[in-house]
Amino acid sequence: MSEGSTAFKADPNWVTGTILQIVVAGISFLASLIVVLSITLRRDKNVSREMSGLRKNAYRRIIFGISIADMLLSFSLSAGVVLFTPNDAPQFARWGIGNEKTCAFNGILLNSGLQLSPMYIGFLCFYLYCKTKHKMPDEVFKQRFEIKIHIFIFAVVTTFNIAAISLNAFNLIESGTLCSFASKPTGCTISPKYFGECDPDIEKATGNLILVSFGILGSSFLVIVFFMTGLLCHVWSLNRIYRTISTRIGSNQRSEPSPLPNLRDLNSNDNSLEETNVQDAPNGALVGRSADESSHLPNLRDLNSNDNSLEENNVQDAPNGALVGRSADEIAENAEKLRKLYVRVSITQAILFVGAYVVCNFTYFYFAIANTIQRNPSYFSHPLLRYFQTISFSGVGIVNILVFTRPAISNLRRLKPDYSWFYCFYLVLLNGGEVPVLENVILPHAAFAELNSVPFGIENEASLGMSIIGDYRGSYEQLSENNAAYNPEENWGYVRGVRLVPPSGALRRVQSNSRNNESLLVGSLDSFPIESQFDCDEDMTFEHIY
Image (cartoon, rainbow, N blue to C red):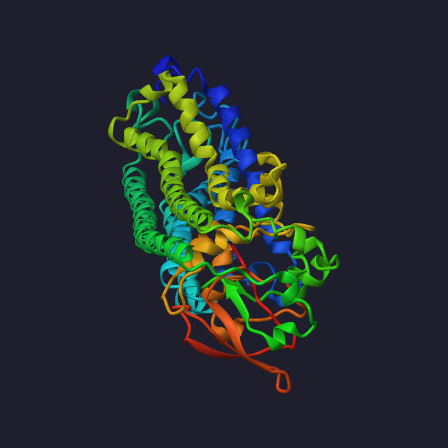
């Protein structure tokens, strides 16, 4: 290095930018760590220990992968400011206390997190696409895709890191805050006059590795856009069906009103559901749950303990203050509101997946290309741009968590309007990205049932919308766990005891035989046969999700 190297002007905003990087990356690391621990240590009720936590479904495993990637990236950004050797260049290595091995270790963590995060987000988009459009059960998805994709992702990242280490490509970058793909000696790409000529072999290797890294990031972005676009096309096609169904419901109920049975009549006898048909359950939106989970819904015997209570009041707790016994105009209006909500939520979530990726990675692409082509640190003269780059790149984990927890937070706030957003975010985070099971919450029914209430025999995918919006637990996990339309028949279950019967729909029990405990269920679920035989108990019933 020549004596004139001291004339080089270092970044005047380095200290502020570095502290900001440590703080933002540290917060992101802690948030991802909470998600990882909550998923790993979670023990689901009425589920064996072997089927809890990560083993439960693909959704949790993918979220776990995203969180691990965020932890690797965040840790490398926080600790990277000290893991390089202080002998690289005094102008850059201000806080370095490490050596070449710690620098390479930091580069491995950074590169692993940087590559794993977008690939797992693309994996999540593919999973949502399979669950919504193709209604693929979790077990089928696991056997056909999940294991192979996990192996592919880890193989790509491992091979990439081995190549980088063997080529000695992990070195201190010119910002002096971490080790990544960089030429050696540090600063040679900025001013060979001051810092010496770059090693030609390392310079060529880093250039090729950066191109491969761009290819991985770009391919992940295309995967995200492709499957989110496919999901939106599917949503739009369903929206047209919903609009037709909603209009038909309104016109049919205006011309032929059919009052709902009184809840006291349904429960006048302990075996009333064995003697009469259980009607009016939403098409494509029934689910059998465990007795423990179902305990959050009121029992009809409890509701009917006062003979006059149900005579004097309609059953409430429907969204938007709707009542079970409503006029045709109110039903049509609520169905139309739900249709618009379904489209809005789906579009918003797709835009957030794409937008979050662009915001978090745009500055990385920009500065990487600028360093490679221009070889000029002129961007350091713009502190606002430097701070934006630090926050967006260091906060990848925070942004990802906010995006994939958004549906759960929205649903929790619908259940608990008095909860603040931050408290809901805290509860969802502790529950691994899912809405926690709440005590003493009577779930709303009616307004979410209208859109499913189609004439018998109409093929409809109404449960898709309800699942994307989320049921009372409110996460994309509901695409597989509690939604009957996304489970094979053998996974359907039942609960003991008479429970609150949904107000309207097209799936019902038409035959019962208490001697052999069998009932025949008929319906119009497009993913199942019209007639299916199930084992059941004497006072079996199903509960719907919304």
